[in-house]
Amino acid sequence: MFKNHTKKSVICQKGMSKMLFVTAFLLSLSMFSQPVQAASTKAEKEWTFLLFLNGHNNLDSFGDYNINQMEQVGSSDQVNMVVQWASLAHGKTQRILVKKDADTNKVTSPAVQTLPAVDMGNYKNLIEFVRWGVQNYPAKHYMIAVWNHGNGWHLMNAGGMHIQDISYDDNSGNHITTEQLALAMDESAKIIGHKVDVYGSDACLMAMAEVAAQMKNSVSYFVGSEEVEPGYGWPYNTWMKRWVAKPTATPAEVATYLTEEYVKAYNGGIYGNQDITFSAYDMSKIDGLMNSVGALNKALTALPDMNAPKTAANATMSFTLEDYKDLTDFTGKLESSKAAINTAVLSSVRQSVKDFVIANGATGAYAGAAGVSIWLPTSSYDLSTYGDRYSKLEFNKATGWYNFLTQMSK
Image 1 (tube, rainbow, N blue to C red):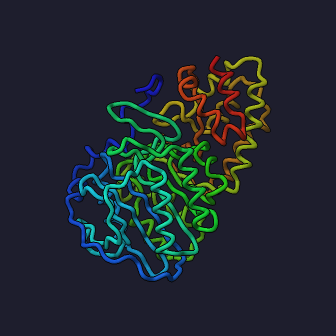
Image 2 (tube, rainbow, N blue to C red):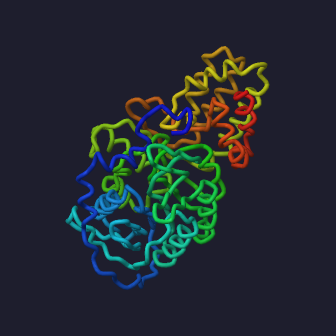
Image 3 (cartoon, rainbow, N blue to C red):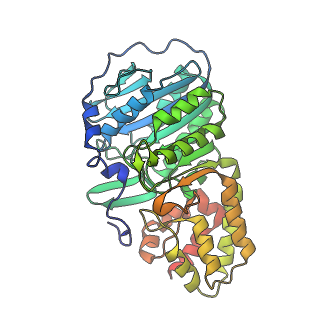
């Protein structure tokens, strides 16, 4: 484990919970149905959901589980559910149109196209899937989701697991960086002809200001978790039941439905009780968020010493990685500290988070999380390890946040 990343021995429940949910593994033994011909209709529907499901790792069995959940609802006359499913157990990659069935132990949806094992850690293959999906399943609105391990915007290597950014592929050793994910969304928006209506990460630790900021020009709404996701991930059955019941749902409503159903699922719902977070962002408000953080950066760097901000940062709610902190909680800790920061600056940050986050939920130990995490390392080690890359991220270009981090680490 990297120095100072010592908060939890469990790195990512979505990665480790294979041991916890042994019964789900049995689902991976299900047989595929025979492939069918590519979709012949070009009729435009209200929505197409494109799920890039990377099972090339120890999450493989949960892919079967989540697709079976989707099959409890199935594509409708107005909502397409389309999955690029890469599986270690099955040794191939299939593109499937999810159809409703009554069998919860076997994936029966038709394989529209079968491919050799695709490198799911190559962002160009995400773009190609989107291109194919838009061509074959045209719609007024599109949601794109990436399903896999996630680690925010930087690397975690512990317990034999090597996770960086998102969509780590055990076969190739590749992963999709935050910068590459943004390139994929930029290209997807061009393919679609407008911004991606909703982008989501069914992966750990991706609800970060830094990750969202990379997509500011290509995505309208963003969903994800500040904290790790348990192995079962999103509750596809309950969420899609709501979605299909209202196919004319706006992008904001689809993102809100998922946030609400995710929190319900882990708060005494279908997945029991676990400490989780989930949030949805209105990306049209991200400039306001970055402007307020930029003002906070200027106020912090103007302080004569960094003792109070560093104390506040250390006390701020963090997630599985100690350098990922809840932005709103940080402003509260600053206000309680002896740092001479104008309260209007802190209030502006809190208000900008409220404007940006259209739906948010958190349970247990994270009940106070407001929905947006930010990189807030207090060690010179973390800064020296990741600082050069961070300085080039769009969030830092807009806010100058690296200036404060550098000053605080001295």
